[in-house]
Length: 165
Image 1 (cartoon, rainbow, N blue to C red):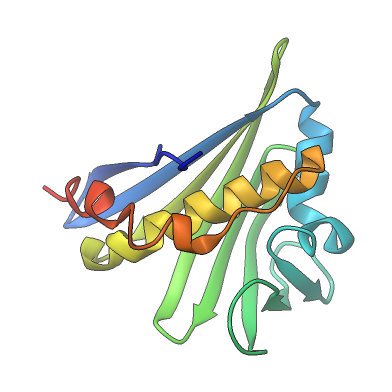
Image 2 (image 1 turned 60 degrees about the vertical axis):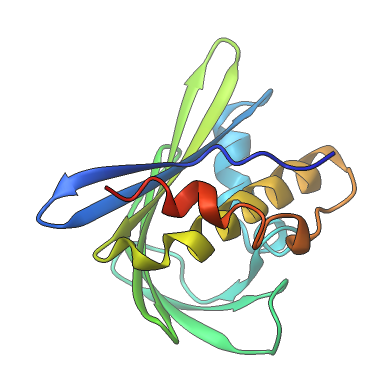
C-alpha cells in the first residue's frame, strides 16, 4: 500500500512555519516516550545516539537509515518526560529545531513531531522524510516490515510544497 502523507504546515508568523506530523499508538505515553528517547529503541527506527540525554546537554546522533556514516550534534533544549522533548540538530543544511510531544488518552498515546521551519522552501523533502521516519517508528513498535523511503520521496513532495502559503 502506498503511504499517504498526513503532515500539516502551519504559519506561525514572521515568515516561519511549523510542520506537524502525528501518529497514534495503542500504548501508554511512557512507552511511546521510551521509543523516542531510549538509545536502543531509537536505533530501531531513527538512529543511534550517545551521551548524557539531559536538558542543556549535547549528544551525538548517527542516523541509521541515511546514506553515509555521519554523526550530528544534537542539543537537548528541553526534556520533560513523558510529554515534551525539544532538540536542535546540527545538519549539513543548518540547524533544525524539533519538538516531540506525547499526549496520553484512554485510547492510547499520540505523538506529534513538530519541525520549526524558518524557511518552508525545503518542506517538499523534509515532510516526506518525517512521514517515513514516523512510519518507521510504527513498524518498529509493531514488528512489521520497515517502509521504503522511495515510497515517500519524491511521491509526497507536492503534497507538502502545496501547503506553503
